[in-house]
Length: 432
Image (cartoon, rainbow, N blue to C red; front, top):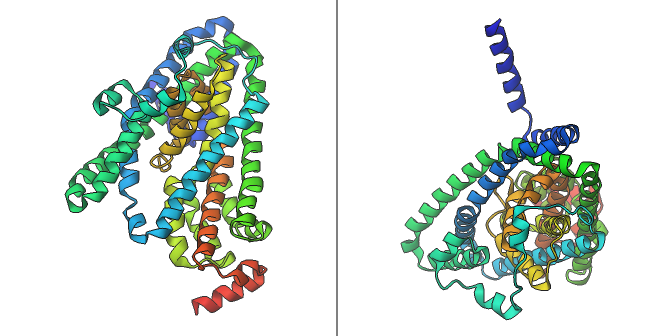
């Protein structure tokens, strides 16, 4: 009997581990809500499980951001070689990322997804602090002691130091290569550690959601639905509104033709939730449907997969405001600027990290002193949000590639404006 039980448990565990992580997290959230509603206030006994998960995420923040940013900056040596194209790509991606998070903050402010929850946290009290002036904030971005900034978790200072060090390692050429290899190795180790920590997410989410549901009952479900709506509305506005405007005003191109041409890539992005996984489809759409020279797309698209996080940045804006509203914390305009700066600069090095959205959210919340319990609450719906933000990321990559190709006279406008059948004929003619 004991052997049969052990065998059954082994099969059950093997079956559970074969379930995709996003589905495990979703199951953890649903089980947590049901458990919390059943136990009521007694569900607080499960909160330490969630607290341990939050603490492991905190452990990752500084070393992960520091190492990945240095690797992100030093990997852009091709940008210097390609000169003008590299500068345009870098400026476009960072500019649209800052606009995306601003839009996310605006949508979150208007829709108020976390209003009325009145949650409490041990971190809430420490989040109420004297508001520095904008001049103080700008001055304090540069650390006087980088080691102290790393030790105390001053995220913006860590980001600035990491970017500066990365640029310096590139500029010293061969002398910097040994150090770059060390940081690449450390970054890979941090990515692996992040992957290990994210495997604990279903259990951490279960503990915190049980506590939240037991403490606040069904009142917390409607705000989560509002978060999903807010993110999807923000993503739609950014794609249909902002990107269409850029194509029309900057590139003088028909946005409808553009979206028709990239529809296959967007379908892959939505279903896989992976910008890197969508890259082959994006490359195919760029050359065969949009008529972009492969010399441009083969550089700009992979760079965008690394540093372009428009969708993730927009998601940061909405979810950060949700957490602030849920815990009753008023953000100042300096906090808004800090969130924009943090998410924009962090986008350089965190795009390829497993669980990048949640890691970046942790980073943003830490920067402005918001409770990290919000991360576990958002984790339950992260997969649904991830699908939308990946579509924005991939759209942004292709918009940037199209605009830059047009500015460099590397876009076949006849090909761009052709219908599907004509595009295929033109592509075959070019290949031959």
